[in-house]
Length: 255
Image (cartoon, rainbow, N blue to C red; front, side, top):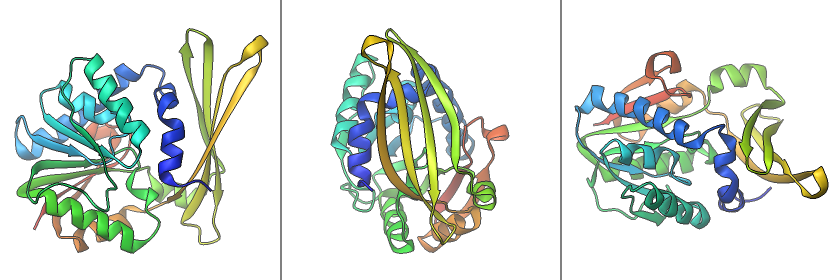
């Protein structure tokens, strides 16, 4: 199984192909997250850290609606692409390579810390999750807001599905199909993920790209407890039908 950094370094050039229309998805996700932030902190603009920014899906969108966003990520390839994509869209997005367990920012530097798109569950132990959340609390102002999103693991843990539904996008060369196989550990809480992309190959065939990583399928109760233990209060969950975001969103305020 590859490291998380290796997984995202390998995926960085193709990550946008997960979405039928990446720019449209960025806009939808930014509108949803901005709504969550506005409801709790007001319109802003706010100083935002996206500490798992990847190629910029949430960070670029939030900067595009007016927030002052800084992006950090474990993957140098993803961070480099986020900077290029932000510039191409006329958006200011300072970025840095950083592990979310060791954020290189001064205390109380941000109004909002975002860790979206199922990033936190790459941390496979309670100690690592606690370390990351304590670090997020450190860089948040006392009146700030933590915003996390993860897959709906309450439902997933009960069913332990072997795969995720395929996704399609269209390129100048043809269709790209993305799908995942999930191999559950004996503990029923962690799983190895095989991420497949089928892209148009030479001679009319398919090029198969495979990347592998591991997740901890944290339930709402588990994550809420970890967040509270790390120094947060007012822990709330926002379901997709209410927030407009495609995953359940947790918000919390520093104690």
